[in-house]
Length: 447
Image (tube, one colour):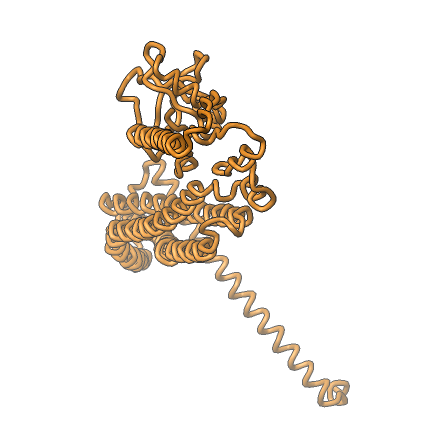
């Protein structure tokens, strides 16, 4: 005591505080032991009851309607998980498709040369494509994926409630069987009987409360699947339809640009562009005037009998028809006849005005192969309808097409099956060859 009395006040307070802390710790440990003990007892009681039910000594409480509701919930949960997985994969594929299309379009912009037709439209088309894809992906996330996550979030809580009901049902069955055993005993203990009845009523109340709650909520949750699925897929396909419709318009615009580029490919011919600035005569450029060089060299005027190349000679093979080619040929022949008549008139005028001038010598034979081919048309082989001359080289793209070089003479023959004939295409073979095939009419000109 004297030692304690001589202690300073702070040291005494520390001892008191430590003592109070130890008492609080003992109380907490005691409560924890009690809680763990109760949990262990509950677990043991439920395991015992389950074992007796499996052994057939105790009868479990059954509710067929609730078991149907529970199975429906399990099926609904599995279907939703599957749907969420597929939607997630669908959105990922849409994003990958957008990235692939964007990369492809950027490559198109890089290879599309500045002077080509439609180059100024590519930038606007790219912005439109980006807006369409951004809107589509946003709708997939906001209207499809996110609502699905919210809908699925209801399942874990419901699943835990079903597990709790199962535990409370086991407690109720155990209390019921215990009460039955006490009531069936020959010597009854009123205290035990009263306590068993109280435990039975408490377990029954807890079980019926959660059981009735789930019996109302499970059917409502299961029925909600129909409007949810309908709304989800309606929004998905509406966004997809809008996307495809708008993309079709943009792709049609791109198709037209590429069609125009194909039509005007001859405008960007490298040889034509080069010789148009460096030389006024070249045998390789369509439409060059060779008369000046021919006159200077003293050679005959070969262009007098040549057939003019039609303006659409470099257009796509889908344009034109046999009738139009025949019309061009007839026009060329009429021009040649008109030129010959003009020459005859000039000869008559010269003979009248200068009678002492010696007669004009006959014209030299033209070395032009077209003229020889024209003369040969009067004696065509059997089965040949007429002949045409290739104005451009053509390389076959399919096994049934005919390849030829510029200047080749082609014998046009009838199609084996008239139904196989398409507008703008002829069937024939290069003169002197046995290989036949179809070829574009506007790559040739009649002779």
